[in-house]
Length: 137
Image 1 (cartoon, helix red, strand yellow):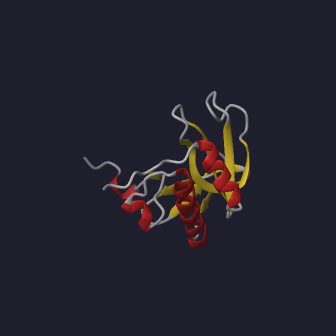
Image 2 (cartoon, helix red, strand yellow; image 1 turned 90 degrees about the vertical axis):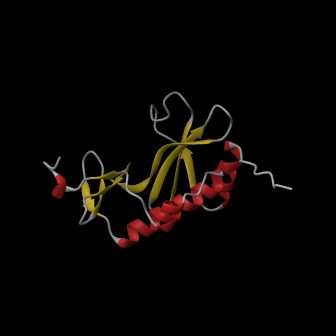
Image 3 (cartoon, helix red, strand yellow; image 1 turned 90 degrees about the horizontal axis):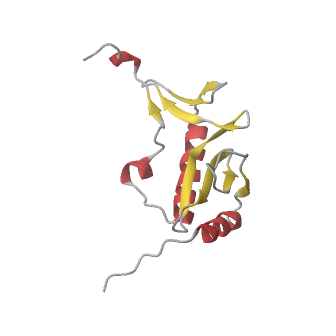
């Protein structure tokens, strides 16, 4: 007999995250797109989540390093990964990548999200920018 997989509700996910020493607080106004959004933080990494229409967890802003009070996006430029906000861009260290990966895995487990093979191997970037392919057809 197949085992039934249950997806935790948003309130269950918030309780699980708070129980695992995540800092959970209301997100800044306007970031939830009309929904009550929460910012969760741990290891210097943050993400924003909200309740989906079906009661599950919806990730509004993917996990990223907190840089200058903003969640930085991970940009891969081929030779180096960078943490980028609208105001700052710094090279990502191995410690940054390790923290983002661990945070992402814990968030997925608490929210009952799918764990994809390529994401389980390491940190995936939000954007890939390879300057060596500019002008190629």
